[in-house]
Length: 242
Ligand SMILES: C[S@@+](CC[C@H](N)C(=O)[O-])C[C@H]1O[C@@H](n2cnc3c(N)ncnc32)[C@H](O)[C@@H]1O
Image (cartoon, rainbow, N blue to C red; front, side, top):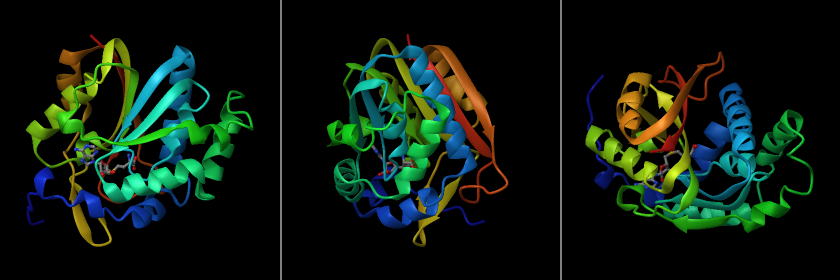
C-alpha cells in the first residue's frame, strides 16, 4: 500500500462528513460498542458520583454521553470540527432515533438507566469547541475520549502530546477513560482518507504508564461483524492521573 503521510494540520476537520460517519459507524449497534458501553457504565458506577466530565473529540458519537448520564453531574462534549459541533448541538436538544437502541441496551444493562433521564437530561449536556493539542485545563473529575486521540494525525509526537494533554485535563487522582482502535493505520469517510496512529497495548502502557496510576487496559476482540476494515480489536484504557 502507498504510504500517504497526513498531518493534523492538513486534515480538513471542519468539513468532516458527520452524517456519513454517523451512518457508517453508529447506524446499527455493533457488538464492540455494546461491550464498551457496558464496561464504561460499570466503571462510572464504581466511581459514582462524578462531578464534571469532558469528552474529547466526540465527533457524531453520542453514546459516551448517554453512558455517563446517570453518573455525571456536568458533561461537556468537545470537538475541533464545526460540522461535528453543529450536529452535537442539535442532538443534545433532539436526538436522532439511532440513539434509542443504545439507550435501550443501557436500560437492560443497569437500572441506573431509568426512563426520564433520556432524552431530558441530555439537554443539560454542554457542547464546546476544543483542540486537545492546546488544552490546558486541570479541573475535570473525569476525561473520556473514544477513537479520537489516535485519530488526530499519523505523527507519533502528536499522539504523545494529545495523550499528555488529555491526562492533564483532570485534577491529580482524576479519572481517564480512553478507547482506541488497535492496529489501525487509517480509515475512509466519503472517499476521504483520515489518519490514525497504530496503537497497541505496549505503546499505551509506555505513554500512560508515566502519566497515570491504577492503569488498566481491556482488549475487546474484533467481532465477526466489525465496525469497519483495518483494525484488530478495541483497547479500553482506564486510569487515574498521578
Ligand atoms: C475518528 S473520529 C472519532 C469520533 C467519535 N469520538 C467516535 O467515537 O466515533 C476523530 C474525531 O477527533 C476529532 N479531532 C481531530 N483532531 C482533534 C483535535 N486536535 N482536538 C479535538 N478533536 C479532534 C475529529 O473532529 C473527529 O470528530
